[in-house]
Length: 137
Image 1 (tube, rainbow, N blue to C red):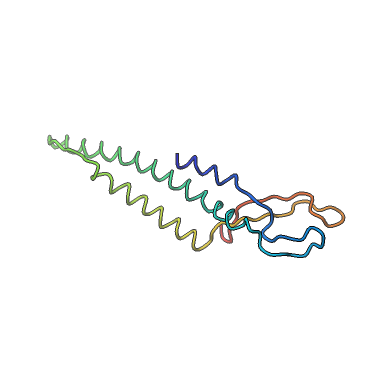
Image 2 (image 1 turned 90 degrees about the vertical axis):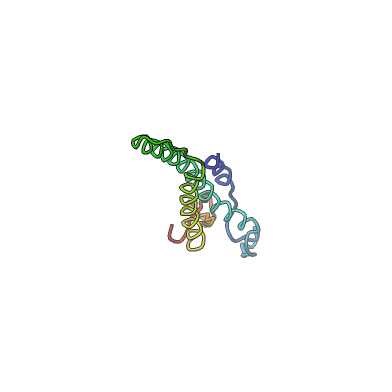
């Protein structure tokens, strides 16, 4: 579910970072929507990574539980494997992912960039492409 929720911020976009007066072409200032779109750009990897680590760690925790049971069976012992035995594994994996995401967000966050791909003979933009990009990807 968390991975699928990353689709929602992928659909958020806006115009250029700076707004221009349509008549004079003078730069008026920062686009008021840009902060929300920048946040949506960074929300995509956060949601996708959180979903991935939860799914992967849950599957790994189940395998770990089975391994502990089989190891106990080899020694002819009964072993009760509780949630606390495997919850540590999930927590460690989620914490490692959290450290990576926080570092990425601080060092090189994704920002909304719109680039003109086709100009008219008068110098006006005919086509543009918007995407989330960062300085060091």
